[in-house]
Amino acid sequence: MLAGFDIIFLTLSTAEFIIGMLGNVLIGLVNCSEWVKNRKISLADLILMCLAISRITQLLVLLFESFMMGLNPPFYSIYKLAKPVTLLWRITNHLTIWFTTCLSIFYLLKIARFSHSLFLCLRRRMNRVVLAILVFSLLFLLFDFLLLEAWNDFFLNIHAMDESNLTLFMNEGKTFYIKSLILLSFSYIVPIALSLTSLLLLFLSLIKHIRDLQLNSMGSRDFSTQAHKKAIKMVVSFLFLSTVHFFSIQLSNWLLFLFWNKKNTKFIMLTVYVFPSGHSLILILGNSRLRQTALKVLWYLKSSLKKGKPISSLQIDLPEPFQR
Image 1 (cartoon, helix red, strand yellow):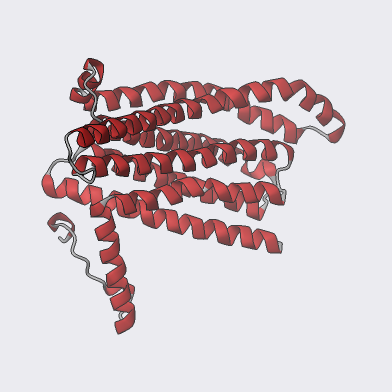
Image 2: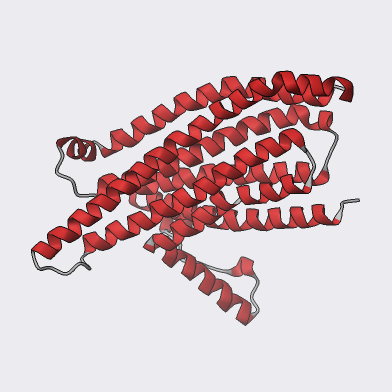
């Protein structure tokens, strides 16, 4: 029998999973359909589509881990399955963070206005810059793989020991655990630092742009100003949610190390859903095409429910390749 808190935990996890899936599936389908229809795709749409795919996988892994914690199966019965799940979580989480960082850098190179030769050179080679960042991120991912094997074996040894030897082992392994946690956290710090740099440069570009408009006696509500402000809002939302995500993961790592099945650990797990679910909604609201598609879907759902039609009978206008 599941305890009352476990039922609440699984219910909330499923609800957050559904919200995140709806948002990311919408982003993926819209950008994929545009790609099929136009036979080409912009760099921003490609990043959004890859980001949506990685987050869909990430949410599936999160839901699986939530059910492992909520149902509380024996440790050894899930250990062989937990190792590849942990690896898959690390890959999807790594890609999600770095794809979002690429989006922040794209906003910077596309919208900011600087006359420095280095910035202009990076702007002309925007596609190569984004590709180079992704290749650079793979170096961190390969380094993480080496640590994850030792990390998983460390947890297995903890659960394999009896209580008489557990205290001694934890004292001896404490240094290893702290070092591993710091090294695994480093791959989060670098993309967050890059996004923070993008935000600061966007802000400086906005100030410079508004000053130029004032000197020329022009209004401050031109297209470039609005684009700056919109990009800044998107990067700020990413930095805020990624910071919450980062500290939630670090705190859950410590709590899982000390208390596998405590209520506090499960509560922290719920906050891990905030980034992949919440940020997808912000991306939809900040993109006119995605926002219009979402409103159109909601309008069809509302109309269908009023007329008493089943949801499966809805016919939403998709691009021609998806209508066949």
